[in-house]
Length: 180
Image 1: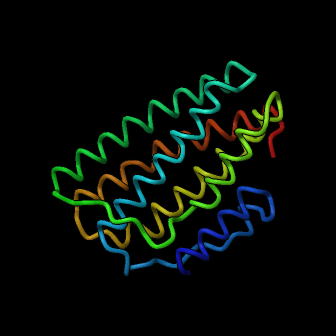
Image 2: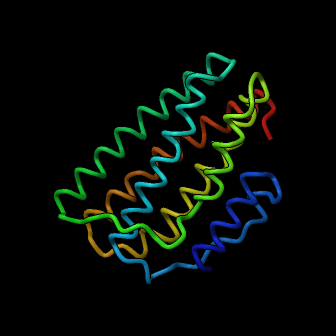
Image 3: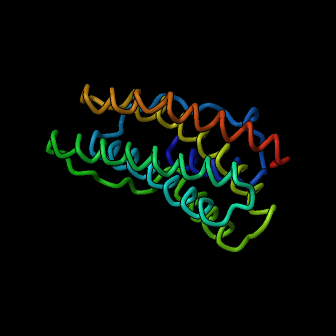
């Protein structure tokens, strides 16, 4: 499956036009170069810094604000580690022609900025569930198999448990506040 098609499927997931169980898993993709994988990894980390940053300020429920703040801190730390690794490897990120989840992220930002109150919390939590689920799939099914540099591959693999913990936290709050 191409990255544009994968991005389109993730966009559908984020906005409820498909269920995560119905989304096909992309086949392993080997043609992605390490600099492009690095850029994709950095983008996926940055997306949640941006969305969670909005929620840290706008969320109505204190536990939603708290989880958003923890996501921002966690992703900022991971982004710093990733940039430090890129510097160590003397690798410059090369953005892909179409970044996975970029359109979904842009739509999420637009909707989050336009929404307030309890609906904001539900929208944020639904986005976090779809985002973390999609990012984990991209890490496992696209980036990790394609990356040749062992240190970059290890960094991507090491991020998965943290993203899974964020997914679990998002799902718990999404259930609590009836986010879809």
